[in-house]
Amino acid sequence: MRRIIALLFAVAASPASVFCGDRHIAFERNDAIYIANLDGTGEKKIADGIFPAISPDGTRVAFNTVEKTSNTTYARHMAVVDVATGKVDVFKDVPSDNSYYPSWTSDGKQILFTTRPHEVWDLAMMNSDGTNFRVLKPGVQNEVTRYSPILARDGQSVFCEDMTNIYQIGLDGAVRAQWKINKIVPNGDMSGDGRIDVSPDGKRLLLSIDMGEESGRKDWDGPLPALWAVDVESQKATRLTPKNCLAGTALGSTTATFFFSAAPPVKRKTRFIECPSTEKI
Image (cartoon, rainbow, N blue to C red; front, side, top):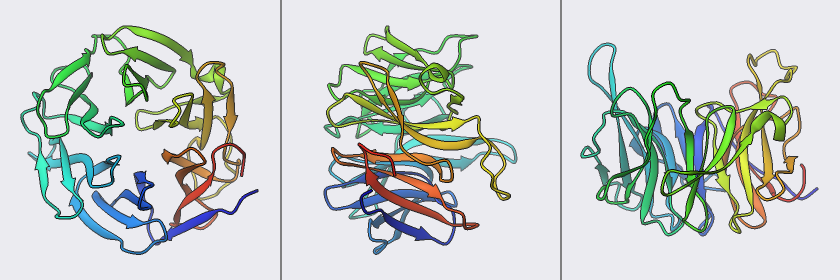
């Protein structure tokens, strides 16, 4: 077993992403976006919002704004913050007040996300400056929503999930492949907030899976979160995190390591862990 690097935070952190060049991590805490070095230093708040995704070059973070419009309603828009200057661009020209869950293309030029301009969710894409908005896969009434979109490494298709299945969808909206989650991972499924990441060589998916297992934790109520790697060609799945580790959010991957947030057996503590992507911890 290789060495594990853990960063402890006093309060739980939720969705996050990693830029490995300068070893930075962007994460969400208390409805705000933070960035920090992987050794825990240099933590700073850079914007108010949720669902951060750091750009491939580490200079920008895409996220969702959350704006209260009445006592019971909110508007959510795509936004990008410049890490160095703190300048925030909110993209309100997207024809919806309910957009969320951004992910970057590998060249950092475009952002993939979901948006709900009507009664169903669409998979959409735009340039990283908010221009050239287009719908890749329109939602269909009475069809399950496609969540967690991320572009394949070759830029020619999108991986996403509907809590029961994982899909590979072409840029023309056609379904290229479909895998039933609980067939690949027995007793597993995904939530609408689950994450999918793609390995740099494009051959594996890193999945945040909700397991139908008991955690054995008095302070935990709900399915046991775990990380799994799935080979796209063979559909062979490998569990990467042990049963006593509540590893709910995949943060990103390199050729040798992957990152995730985990709740160890200490209340109100969350840690970010780096560990080998090719072997169990």
